[in-house]
Image 1 (cartoon, one colour):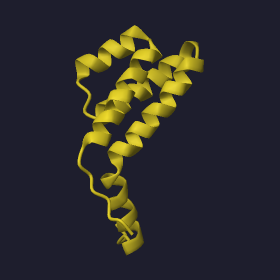
Image 2 (cartoon, helix red, strand yellow):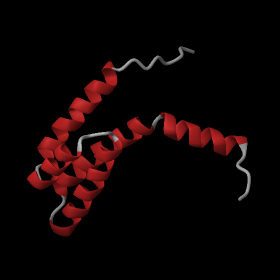
Image 3 (cartoon, one colour):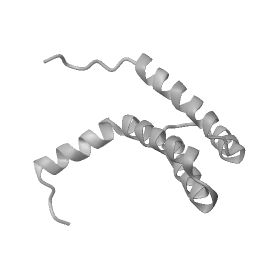
Image 4 (cartoon, helix red, strand yellow):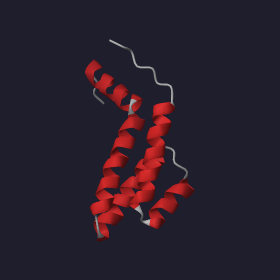
Amino acid sequence: MPKRSNHQDRIIRNYYKNKDSIMIQRLGDLVSDLYLAEGKARERIWSRAAAAMEKLGVPAAQIQHLVDSDNPTLLANLLQQLLQKGAASPNPKPQG
């Protein structure tokens, strides 16, 4: 396997450092898509939303309830809670 460059290592570190933010952003995009989707496309979006929620540590029972409900508003409410929880968590950013 070829050795990664310092630049590639930095990109990978930044991805994992910001993984929760990335998943929350993805979940927000999926909420918007769910409001517009119908049929099979809606099922695929719910599947992607379930995967994103799993990566964010949402309990499996809650994920299953949201998917079974097929209600994007409930998912939007969860997203709002995750955003508030993220804003409340201490994550000091260097000023510069």
